[in-house]
Length: 400
Image 1 (cartoon, helix red, strand yellow):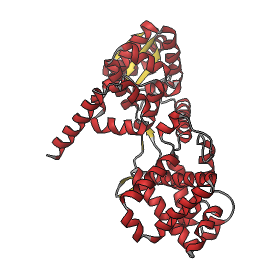
Image 2 (tube, one colour):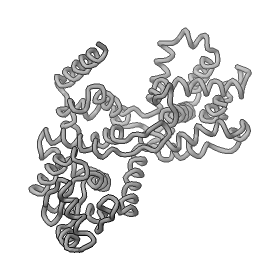
Image 3 (cartoon, rainbow, N blue to C red):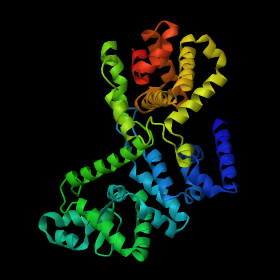
């Protein structure tokens, strides 16, 4: 019964979306996280009409959210190249031209990495030469007998994962017809990181050095994009959160800003500054904006709870006072609090699952409130503490 209700709800959401009079604008202007939550709830396979309207920039944002996953919060996120081609399959259903245009406009390293995870790309001349050699001839024959393949130009495209091969082949054939030179460049890149020899264990060498270097570049580019939007890398989040357990209160309070938090602000577009944000920034929901809305929601929906929680109420009152007295410093403290909430989402779990945004904000506020109480037990000193002590320091103190 629960599954039927969930499915009915997802169908209703999809119907309302498709009936929206300005669907294209909606797809490209709502916050990417909100759109991704909707796609996840409805099911990617049912959202072909929606993602066909997504711009290249919007698809990149959705890919950064959807294609990367870690086995647990704080662990390294890995790219799911097979799921990337599920997205491409849905785009192809909307028309080859749209799918190819989107594919060619994406980060070239990421495209090549995903291709090489799913297919081998070898020069036909190299295949012929290896087939003629005594040591590799049998392996070449076995590979071609056991895997689907296609000749395209001067290359053999050989399947490594049968589930994605038809989609990849359709994309490559369409590119060969309409964008031959760009396809040649992509395949040439694939050939360079595909082995030119075979080994006895699995029929092909993994060309580790080149392929691994390319993948590291892909991950780094994604980290840079995410940092500019206010996200914390899982490894950084895990390291920051661990500080509460290994540093004394004196060491937490000593020196300047936490180095991980400082790096976050240097990478984050706008960071804790007071510059004017663009309309797109406001739609995307910068972390301090999201945090402020969430805190307002908490104050409204949980007013009774806040009144009984004197520590948290005291912190919120001090922040409100700081906003009235020093807007720039208030913006800084809100951004620091946003960093703490984002670190919780990226680096820890709650009941075996990642924190939801509201839960992370609430936990961050509560930890900072405990830190404020520990550092400034006299309620009259709370405002002064917030002018002197950053929120990430209060957060770490409150988690000790």
